[in-house]
Image 1: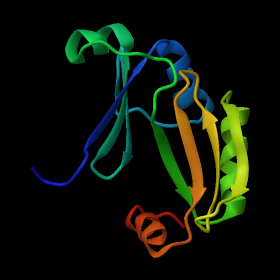
Image 2 (image 1 turned 90 degrees about the vertical axis):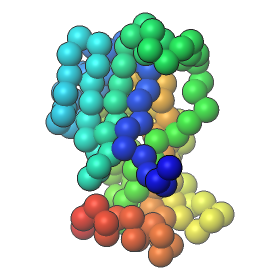
Image 3 (image 1 turned 120 degrees about the vertical axis):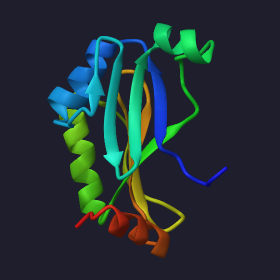
Image 4 (image 1 turned 180 degrees about the vertical axis):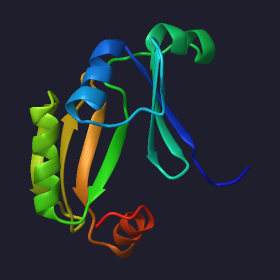
Length: 140
């Protein structure tokens, strides 16, 4: 098996709220959508997919939608950019979990949750790996 991820699929309880948040409020573009599925290409070769929980369970098995032990990360080039992205998410209806904070590992990050409770980490990772990842996807 090759070391790669092409889809991250999350079960959601409220697809209309999910679409409103990601498409309408944040202005992201869908790659595919219907009544029960929303797919967003978030990087070259990577799709973030949301499925209505009932449809997800029919294919993948039972899920719990409470306090999923996962974060989705969005890296930025500076602490100021982290704060700006957090504010954009809050303005779009996200819930602020942790404001931007200097971290022991040398970076800066904050967290919000989307309408389904999925946690997003917005981070500045000033390490060579953090910079390389941003370079690979063309972030200025």
